[in-house]
Length: 173
Picture 1 (spheres, rainbow, N blue to C red):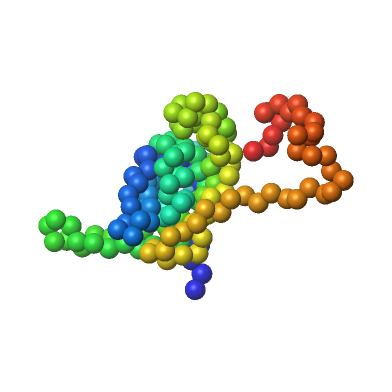
Picture 2: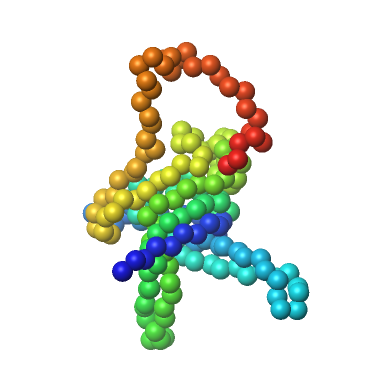
């Protein structure tokens, strides 16, 4: 069976980071997504959906380091159905997302994380993909760094590449 969910929205709270006894990082938060539409009577309406998110491994640590309440993020993952018994003995349930990949969408130097990071997301580029890999909950998942392409042998070295003056408003992301 196929189970994949892609959501874009804003985090509803800071990441709550914990570690399993085996040392795997687990981060929990929520995301709010919205949809604007016209109702049958022609009025503009907005529908908001709140979903809990769970990050594992290095992805959880990166999310905790760079994301804050209000951060805009794209997440890809699996839909999960959680059930439990409340304090009164009643059965409760909810759907949540187990995040496999995330992309930070706040521009560098803006958003809630920038206030605490001194104007950006530190060493990681904004808009980076951070994947948790294809592991089960008990396995240590790895950080998938963006791959860099090899320059051709006749290309100038990295320290001789000319700087290009591009205004931030010209970049489409």
